[in-house]
Image (cartoon, rainbow, N blue to C red):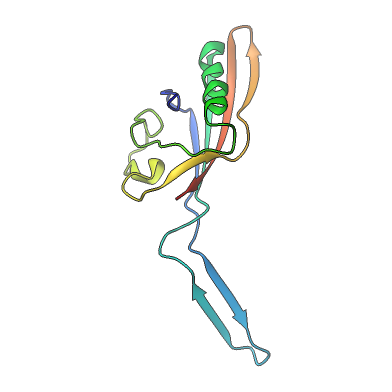
Length: 127
């Protein structure tokens, strides 16, 4: 099952950082080593407000299909995730970088009123 093709109401994008280890000597000298050539721990928070309960259920179904936080999935074909973002969609989807996503936690659903829900999704970028 693919990630739901629903346009988010809002996004939080954390581009992560490079794997750097810093060593400090007793005299105050600092040595920094770069342990890779790709950013790690990219985070993507997606909020979906006032969507139908059947649409909200799609997030639980997808979470179940990727075995929760275990398996990774691709967002490059999902145009809804980056809809409304004027920058390059690769910032969000990871297209071209080999980036994949996994759930950081289960999606949370808040039932606003009968038939209408808010959903929050937290994803972590992995390679």
